[in-house]
Length: 119
Image (cartoon, rainbow, N blue to C red; front, side, top):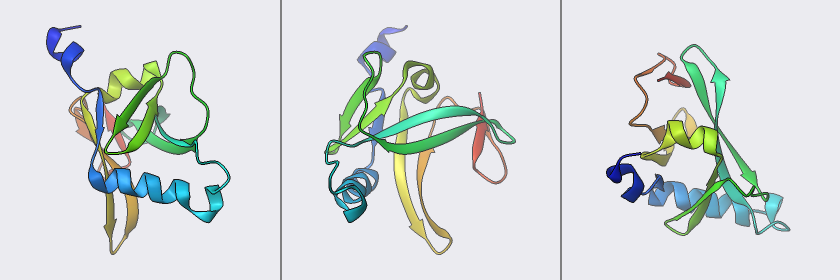
């Protein structure tokens, strides 16, 4: 791993994404589980080859990367981290709905629908 990668922050959350994570965790649906974190992971699939997945999780494995960014905690497994390293997670709200988005410097291409990517 280069010195740039060793010194870089592995993943960042925008203020908008961090605010949404905190809002979701404090909602009535999760009020009893305030130790939840945003888990981001990669699955094979979609027309691009890989898909981003997001869940609220209270489990952290010993080999997970745990990142605090803008007051929210993100958990990423080692396999997914290699594909997400240097990425930025944002939260978007628009007429067509709302969703978390990943700006991924490792992605070589994104499918036309935007739900999957390739490396």
